[in-house]
Image (cartoon, rainbow, N blue to C red; front, side, top):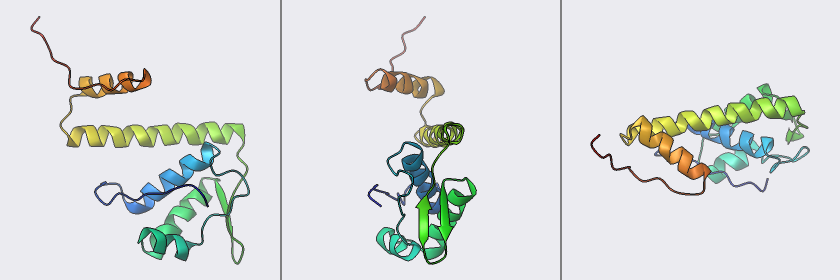
Length: 136
Protein backbone atom coordinates (compact mmCIF):
# COMPACT_ATOMS: atom_id res chain seq x y z
CA UNK A 1 0.00 0.00 0.00
CA UNK A 2 1.60 3.27 -1.10
CA UNK A 3 -0.89 5.83 0.22
CA UNK A 4 0.15 7.56 3.43
CA UNK A 5 -2.22 7.25 6.36
CA UNK A 6 -1.86 9.46 9.42
CA UNK A 7 -3.75 9.07 12.67
CA UNK A 8 -4.08 12.32 14.62
CA UNK A 9 -4.33 11.62 18.36
CA UNK A 10 -5.66 15.16 18.93
CA UNK A 11 -8.58 14.54 16.53
CA UNK A 12 -11.77 13.67 18.44
CA UNK A 13 -12.67 11.23 15.65
CA UNK A 14 -11.97 7.62 16.72
CA UNK A 15 -8.79 6.17 15.14
CA UNK A 16 -10.70 3.45 13.25
CA UNK A 17 -12.83 6.14 11.61
CA UNK A 18 -9.80 8.28 10.74
CA UNK A 19 -8.25 5.21 9.09
CA UNK A 20 -11.48 4.18 7.33
CA UNK A 21 -12.09 7.71 6.04
CA UNK A 22 -8.57 8.11 4.67
CA UNK A 23 -8.52 4.71 2.98
CA UNK A 24 -11.99 5.25 1.53
CA UNK A 25 -10.80 8.56 0.14
CA UNK A 26 -7.75 6.97 -1.47
CA UNK A 27 -9.92 4.24 -2.98
CA UNK A 28 -12.64 6.54 -4.34
CA UNK A 29 -10.09 8.92 -5.88
CA UNK A 30 -8.19 6.05 -7.49
CA UNK A 31 -4.99 6.60 -5.52
CA UNK A 32 -5.50 3.02 -4.36
CA UNK A 33 -6.72 1.37 -7.58
CA UNK A 34 -8.67 -1.86 -7.89
CA UNK A 35 -6.51 -4.87 -7.15
CA UNK A 36 -4.26 -3.05 -4.69
CA UNK A 37 -3.57 -5.21 -1.66
CA UNK A 38 -3.83 -3.35 1.62
CA UNK A 39 -1.28 -3.91 4.35
CA UNK A 40 -2.04 -6.82 6.66
CA UNK A 41 -3.94 -5.81 9.80
CA UNK A 42 -1.05 -6.55 12.15
CA UNK A 43 1.48 -4.71 10.02
CA UNK A 44 -0.65 -1.59 9.61
CA UNK A 45 -1.56 -1.62 13.30
CA UNK A 46 2.14 -1.77 14.23
CA UNK A 47 3.04 0.95 11.68
CA UNK A 48 0.35 3.29 13.04
CA UNK A 49 0.76 2.27 16.70
CA UNK A 50 -2.86 1.09 16.86
CA UNK A 51 -4.51 -2.02 18.23
CA UNK A 52 -5.10 -4.81 15.71
CA UNK A 53 -8.84 -4.56 16.40
CA UNK A 54 -8.85 -0.89 15.39
CA UNK A 55 -7.43 -1.67 11.95
CA UNK A 56 -9.63 -4.76 11.60
CA UNK A 57 -12.73 -2.64 12.31
CA UNK A 58 -11.74 -0.07 9.67
CA UNK A 59 -11.21 -2.89 7.15
CA UNK A 60 -14.59 -4.46 8.03
CA UNK A 61 -16.35 -1.15 7.48
CA UNK A 62 -14.57 -0.68 4.14
CA UNK A 63 -15.71 -4.16 3.16
CA UNK A 64 -19.29 -3.41 4.23
CA UNK A 65 -19.17 -0.31 2.02
CA UNK A 66 -18.08 -2.42 -0.96
CA UNK A 67 -14.67 -0.81 -1.24
CA UNK A 68 -12.49 -3.83 -0.38
CA UNK A 69 -12.73 -7.60 -0.13
CA UNK A 70 -10.98 -9.66 2.54
CA UNK A 71 -10.15 -13.30 2.02
CA UNK A 72 -8.55 -15.31 4.77
CA UNK A 73 -4.97 -16.02 3.79
CA UNK A 74 -5.10 -13.70 0.78
CA UNK A 75 -5.49 -10.39 2.59
CA UNK A 76 -7.60 -7.36 1.84
CA UNK A 77 -7.81 -6.09 -1.73
CA UNK A 78 -9.35 -2.95 -3.21
CA UNK A 79 -12.40 -3.70 -5.36
CA UNK A 80 -13.31 -2.18 -8.71
CA UNK A 81 -15.67 0.72 -8.13
CA UNK A 82 -18.74 1.30 -10.25
CA UNK A 83 -19.34 4.93 -11.24
CA UNK A 84 -22.47 4.94 -9.04
CA UNK A 85 -20.60 3.54 -6.04
CA UNK A 86 -17.73 5.93 -6.59
CA UNK A 87 -20.12 8.87 -6.69
CA UNK A 88 -21.88 7.70 -3.55
CA UNK A 89 -18.58 7.09 -1.78
CA UNK A 90 -17.34 10.54 -2.78
CA UNK A 91 -20.50 12.14 -1.45
CA UNK A 92 -20.09 10.19 1.80
CA UNK A 93 -16.45 11.28 2.04
CA UNK A 94 -17.44 14.89 1.39
CA UNK A 95 -20.08 14.68 4.13
CA UNK A 96 -17.49 13.26 6.54
CA UNK A 97 -14.98 15.97 5.66
CA UNK A 98 -17.64 18.64 6.09
CA UNK A 99 -18.64 17.24 9.49
CA UNK A 100 -15.00 17.20 10.61
CA UNK A 101 -14.54 20.77 9.38
CA UNK A 102 -17.63 21.94 11.26
CA UNK A 103 -16.49 20.17 14.43
CA UNK A 104 -13.02 21.71 14.18
CA UNK A 105 -14.48 25.15 13.44
CA UNK A 106 -16.76 24.98 16.45
CA UNK A 107 -13.94 23.78 18.67
CA UNK A 108 -11.95 26.83 17.51
CA UNK A 109 -15.03 29.01 18.12
CA UNK A 110 -15.16 30.13 14.48
CA UNK A 111 -18.45 31.65 13.42
CA UNK A 112 -20.46 29.90 10.72
CA UNK A 113 -20.03 32.96 8.48
CA UNK A 114 -16.24 32.89 8.87
CA UNK A 115 -16.17 29.11 8.29
CA UNK A 116 -18.17 29.50 5.07
CA UNK A 117 -15.91 32.36 3.99
CA UNK A 118 -12.88 30.11 4.55
CA UNK A 119 -14.43 27.40 2.36
CA UNK A 120 -15.23 29.91 -0.39
CA UNK A 121 -11.71 31.35 -0.23
CA UNK A 122 -10.20 27.84 -0.38
CA UNK A 123 -12.31 27.06 -3.45
CA UNK A 124 -10.81 30.11 -5.15
CA UNK A 125 -7.24 29.39 -4.09
CA UNK A 126 -7.04 31.87 -1.23
CA UNK A 127 -6.97 31.61 2.51
CA UNK A 128 -9.67 33.37 4.48
CA UNK A 129 -8.72 34.97 7.74
CA UNK A 130 -11.22 36.31 10.19
CA UNK A 131 -13.12 39.03 8.39
CA UNK A 132 -13.36 42.40 9.97
CA UNK A 133 -16.92 43.53 10.24
CA UNK A 134 -17.65 47.16 9.72
CA UNK A 135 -20.65 48.70 11.44
CA UNK A 136 -23.62 49.00 9.10
